[in-house]
Length: 276
Image (cartoon, rainbow, N blue to C red; front, side, top):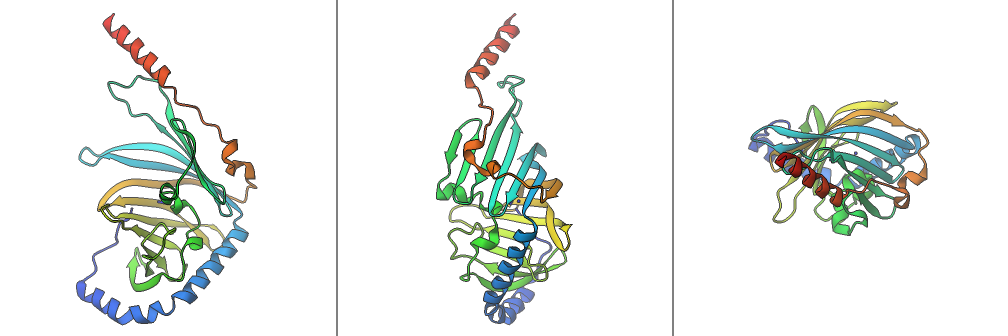
């Protein structure tokens, strides 16, 4: 339920120095206990929230200058450690693209062991470790983070007091830094820095309760550098509907294959009609 981040406010350099010098030593020693508390909390979450079905709207920025966006619908299913995302994106209209070509379907499945992509263009493909990293934000992040992470300070994000945790030594964890709500232990922000690449940032907001005290973010913004590239908005969320294990079996997935020959045929037909 992933995911680039809108930093809430500018923090003064003096305040940062006080924060780092005054808090980091005391907080870093507590990370082990905080991690245990986090894992215990989400173990309880997995017992009470056995499955989820989330319908989302994704808005992707096509042109920042012209303020153009492309909107698509996304469905996310979760059951325990497994997840499945389904998306259908309409092909962008252009003078060279024939009308009525439909959309491109993509299904990503984590079956508890491996991550698979089934798409209209590529068919079924098992993702490599590197390819899998970009989809790990959909996995249970609390299972991936380890005791090697360190609390380096604290910041307020959208009125929430957060631990700032660096995760540079992590290999499987999708973030190099996270902001963890001190009170709820919810993941509020996630940052990933990679050599020779722009920093990516995920920001979760608009949290709503889904059962008892359990809450989920209904808005996620993704940034590359300082540019907002996509926004995910939850339209509906259902829990404990008894999702079938077959939904997380990559061999059971079927998507409509994108027909290149059909596209070429339509392009030729349109050209002939224009000549007439």
